[in-house]
Amino acid sequence: MTKADEVTPAADDRIGPREAAAALRERRVSSRELTVACLRCAEETATTVDAFACLDPAGAIAAAVRADVELAAGKDRGSLHGIPVAVKELIAVAGLPLTAGSAVLAGAPPSVRDAAVVADLRRAGAVVVGTTRTHPFAMGVTTPGVGHPSLPGATSGGSSGGSAAAVAIGACLLALGTDTAGSVRIPAALCGVAGLVPPHGSLSREGVIPVSRSLDAVGVLAAEVADLPVVWRALAAVPTAAAVGKAFVLGEDELTGVAPAVRCGVDAVADRLGGVADRVGLDLRGAARYAARLVVAEALDAHRDRGWWPVHRYRYEPDIRRQLELAERLDPDDVGAARDALARLAARLVELLGEDGILVLPTTPTTAPALPVEDEDGAESRRLAGELTRFTAPFNALGAASASVPVGLDEAARPVGVQVVAMNEAVLLGALEILATEPGVSRR
Image 1 (cartoon, rainbow, N blue to C red):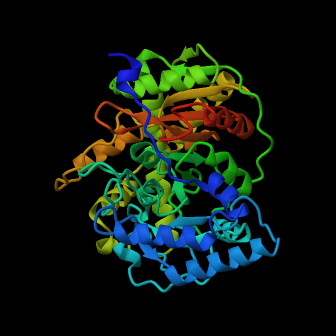
Image 2: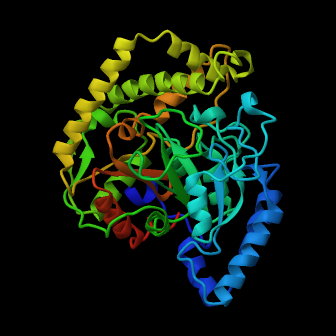
């Protein structure tokens, strides 16, 4: 079977933030029209995809009208001015509930103020249409209740599955997510959209419910690769894109169990970034296990600090309770060993990539799997989490910038995502700009 047989382009004429910005300034569309269309899409798909935890029609339309008035008066806030966006329900939005998808916080009063990154979006003129669903406390690779945007019965991924699905169906043009072990990149790959995770701390986490203090990052999702640099520059102090140096791909030992279409996608992206890539060995399976240990240990600390655990132990969803109980049994020496092992891998990656290298690898080893059928002890969820975070979890701990880019569909019409990683933000930005110009990558 040829590459063309295994990975085929997916046509999509949906407008993204970059194109919408041009249309707004040329008066071909208004922010109000874009916002109403997004809200209508969210409402019409509520019984199938159900990406949103809470919509804010009145607030969104009022903000869109203000954006139109400002643009008409010559006040231009930049590339996100008038663009409808959605925000993962782990991130505070003033006036909307902040429940993190969990019964523990059900009934909590609306947030008093925006998270810092949401305030940044508003200053840039973006229009917040609502909050998107997450796996409870962002501690899982599925998003309960969210249907896949195009594949009934398949998972949309998680924990930012609501954000990825909302972008995929056109219920927003841009969405914020969070990523601790792959929570932006995994659903981006499974839903066929683009997802970007800047290095830890690049975007403020003030007003974001924490999972892991040393691994959490705020990320963004959009339909096209070309939109990621636009959004990144609007929200973070990213330097001018730098030239991309050597491309690296994983050796055969590390690609065991990877679907043929995903392998072909990796080769295609590596080719577009510089031709023949060097194959390298990295123990990402081991690193993912160390990262998982660190995630649950720091999640336990965060939930204790907020007074939720163990006071509300039996209000937690069963899978989250099992993870926090596991963390209670961890030996501190094992957590320290995990940090040390990840530090060694980080040094190896810095040595390998240098200032301008790029690592190209799968985002997930397979395309969107079926929704897991839960058993009593959660074994299926743990298996799926181990599978889907295999290639994503290590990089949150390594100080890297990473993105998942859509490269088309496999022979069963399931989206294929490929991950691109760099130690230098400007180099990743350069790689995204190259990929944005390439057929089959710039659009889903």
